Image (cartoon, rainbow, N blue to C red; front, top):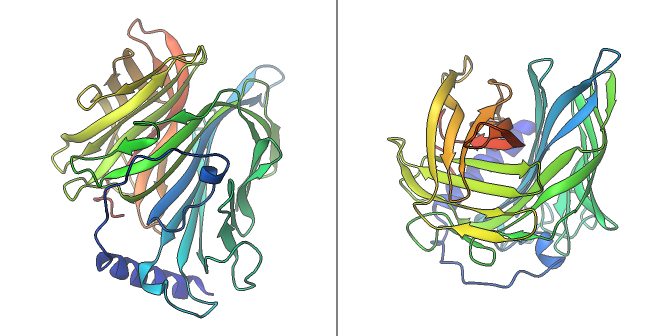
Length: 369
């Protein structure tokens, strides 16, 4: 299938989605693993999102170099094609984004993929170039994948200018977001997702940037988010700001806000789990994002807050981008321009306490899902 044909199907799928049945409020559910680590094909939208940072040897004889990385796989159900009998029917669309932030080199490397999926289990339909396993983590899109291999997860990305070969090892239990994994995303109950995280993942493997191969040093750390939903954006929401932070003491912080067109928060939430396992889920109104510095993109002309004060019940934090230009242009796949990148975090006493990823959508244009 050519990119033009696939993009045309994507446009048709978007039009069909506008006529799709109204989303329903998600009921409380007990998430079960490994099944809920897999794909939920009856839901409209799903993503598996890996972010992290790695220390690698510096170009000089001594010292280290800091790299950030992210790999995201998306699945989107196409309601209009579910009844088609053809094995060529695109019942699901798969997308993938990947990026590497080279802090020392002041450069963001990124790439993207898109493919149709019949919805049949992996390998059964020769027309498929991608699939998502329904029994455990297993998403494949051509030569990109995120899969369970024994007790670990393996992320492999072969992009034009970089390659990721990462092994992710859990060091903590699953973190259920929201109320036992049901995370509210707006003032209406149907704006919600099933959502869990795996923070403080130990990472090994390698990152190649063009012809330079970098072996990850001990202490490289990652974060996995997995969400699935029928509807996450309220009609008044244009986008969101989100952080996932791995603290140096083993704690983990999630904080987010959904924004209206005027920049005001429509909804907020998140959670904090200490290094010893105590968990606190934030109620609406307990998280406040206050921008303190902005960067304007030459590509999109969007003005992104690249430094924030984020107030949470755990503490006030300064969240600062390690590279201003971490904007991703995904118009060749999911259709959005957004900012997603490596950041460093300081507590209210201005002590460096962690690193993580900051994601900001809806600044270049309102996000459509």
